[in-house]
Length: 254
Image 1 (cartoon, helix red, strand yellow):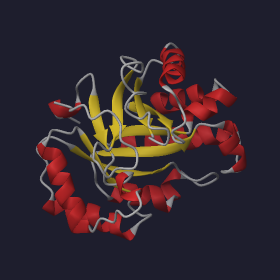
Image 2 (tube, one colour):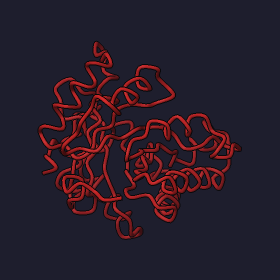
Image 3 (cartoon, one colour):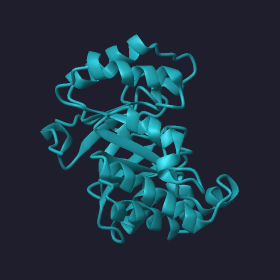
């Protein structure tokens, strides 16, 4: 699949205003709002626009349906967000995976557990099955011509508990064809120095393209991705808007 030059640079912004930004207290987008915001983000040159979670929220499912005919992006690529297949379910039979495919976006962003505690206690499955869930789902979308990003949820907390398992998740995704593996500071508790050390270690152990997604719970979401995580991470997931829940480096992608 040919890529837009705006999305193929060494560093680019993956904007999450329409999903993460919509989770802030007092923010509620209509479908018309989301279409309008997407057009504005495209105008300023954002590389990727995460539109929402089709199949999980009816409003997001409607957004992607309308976007196919009403949204004409010149720079950005539209992204559908969702989870890997469920444990014990074939990827072809997973309804949420099918909803992601039906969104017909050129890019899919999958969220996966990368903390051993969450795999065992939240998903209630084995570490190996979680790796298979990642590999199967990434491979499924790659086979259907999608560019795939993988969000490694709670990556930094997970690294502190087990510094190897998150790397195995990234490796499974890259082996299956993922374009970017995103290290997520989901709780927003990382400080710049600590995050930089972890990113440098992970970068030395994997060969794929890494991204960074920092929440702003401690007010460090701008400081942590830049400059200590670069050049190790080349994709910054961020809603660079005043109302967003997790603002990060608002570097333009063009």
